[in-house]
Length: 247
Image (cartoon, rainbow, N blue to C red; front, side, top):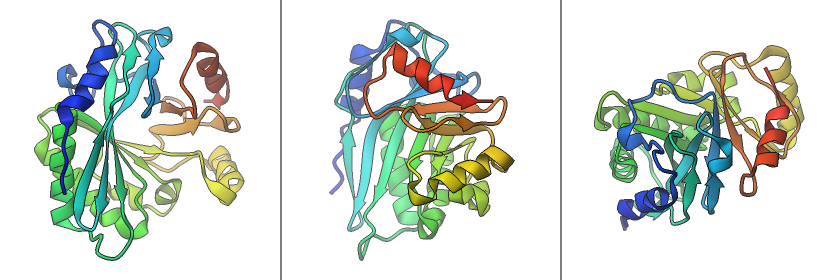
């Protein structure tokens, strides 16, 4: 069953966004995104303290594929931002890994259509923890988004760090890849040491996602920083998270 409510998702953002906040509906398609972006997930967020130089990557909806059908949950919580701050819509994709979940072009086109309906603009970040067997679907989805989004478009995609090391991330047709260097499980310390010593290979070296409640991390100079927090953002939390990042 496909249950779409894109207007609710945008209304939840617009109702609380600061005066002059720029959603992707009036963004220029990708140039000039801030060097620091705060992820705003499915909870009320007041980010006016961050000022206009810090952008927001705001969840607008989650799409789950179950037994071949799309189930869409739009954002219902308010988001408030500083005037003239930039807001990048984020869509979370979750795939039921049970029998019959499927992949391929049909799912990719349906997902792309649903994402375009949710973001209603030329820019989007797709948050999809694609396992190795699901990476063909991720490639097809991003390619379909490029065909469907109004030009000039900006397509960002979160990726697993493992896909950067094995080279599969480089095959994704996105303008920006955001390796998620947090919540890495038992391999976390080893991965962090590898990133600290050698960095991440291109194109994974242009952005990085880190968490406010994890150890300090080294990122490439000039890379865009995406910050995740397990609770609502405030000024002390942002300052603490930034201090943990070494460039």
